[in-house]
Length: 114
Length: 116
Image 1: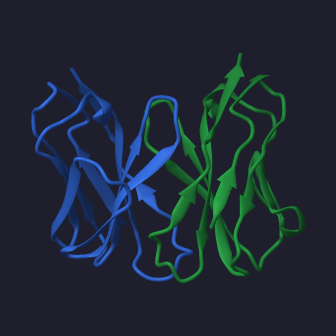
Image 2: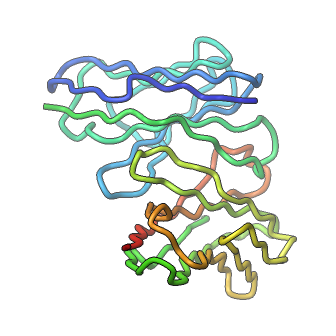
């Protein structure tokens, strides 16, 4: 069966520091991959999605970037974090293909910026 | 453009009560897919159900049931005999045909609190 791993679970970073969140999927090939952010008490905001290695689309302009160096690895990065980057970050995957596939989520990373 | 509305921001019920979470969607496509997710306090989103636009049959899974009505663009979720473990934020989501997953739109969520 497929599993998704996301780490770290929690992270406290000072403003201006870099960021790297990692997500890996096991048990499937060529998945679609997604990064979402959820502000406290709010809904989900799609940040990036990827349909293949080095194929990444950005939904929201910001100081974050994403990379997909391997088929089942998705990394969210920032060179300099802002206070507004605080939130709950969720990685998700879905099967490649038609849009009827549900997305499956990792456990999330709670990011606090000081 | 597609849109999902969950007008109920927060609902509180007492254990064993039935509760219905509303979801209204907008889409121009004739083929689309609807989903419900549960986000317990621990944070991860759990996939509950998927519905295709061409299948309006209602579905029941244990204490959960879903009522899909294309005429009113609604996909409501009912929990029967609610339990404290049902306390969570519930998200409704919409995906249109042929976008290969990249245009998965979530509603703002409804926070359900089931009190003992």
